[in-house]
Image (cartoon, rainbow, N blue to C red; front, side, top):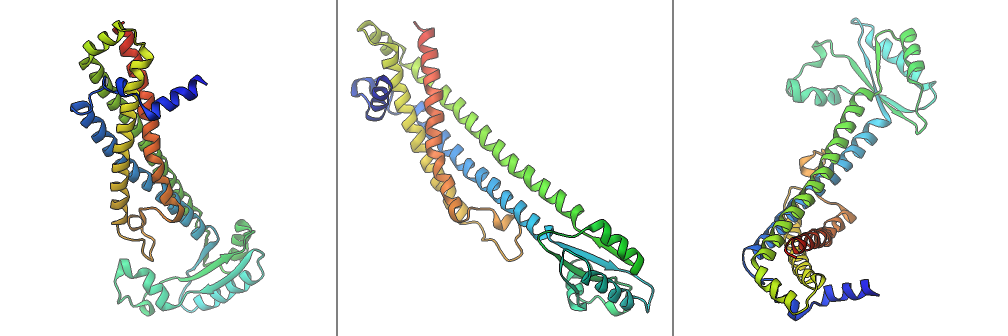
Length: 300
């Protein structure tokens, strides 16, 4: 019952107790600015974390069930070995589909490095076979052994060496985003603590008078906690709104799925930034309450 009463008083406020806290001034502006700035940064840290999570899933799913076989052989033997590889793949369990890339497809793959006019017919470019796995997958070691016997020039690349570093890097970026959010929350708590302590120090004479007339420390602290919690909530709401607008103005994700153009929120992900203002208020509540009681104890 006492906790419920305290919560109601925190929400509704007390006109007399609120006079203890200066409604304007340096500490008020500091709290509003710090909350808005940190909420703005949190929106981008959250967008980074969610975007890298999507990136890791896309990279993993795109490479997990695909493989490539590279066929390199002396002139006149390439086509024969390609046919041998296709025969092996047709009888390999776990292979859903396999096809030989055309010259145009290989030219497009090499174009970023060698330009659009690469003469494939005059260069010893290996033939590439794209392999699609079933959900169960295939035995890579067994397939390599069969290829070594049937087509010595065929090399299987199951994309493991490409997939694992990419997914690991994306996971680390996502962790970096979460750590950034925690650091922002800690910084917000420190700045609000300093602002509340400064306000308490500036109102030392008023606090002394309140104690003389019988006011308890809990009564005085509640006024500071309420005022600074509402200031943090207001500032964080403004910063979050500005951050979401900034995210909306970023380039949209394109067909190539590049990282920077996909930095943003998608679908229900837009609900996550809405949790920032309440969380900022919780941080401000805890920081102000601790600072208020610590300062009041020092001055008792």
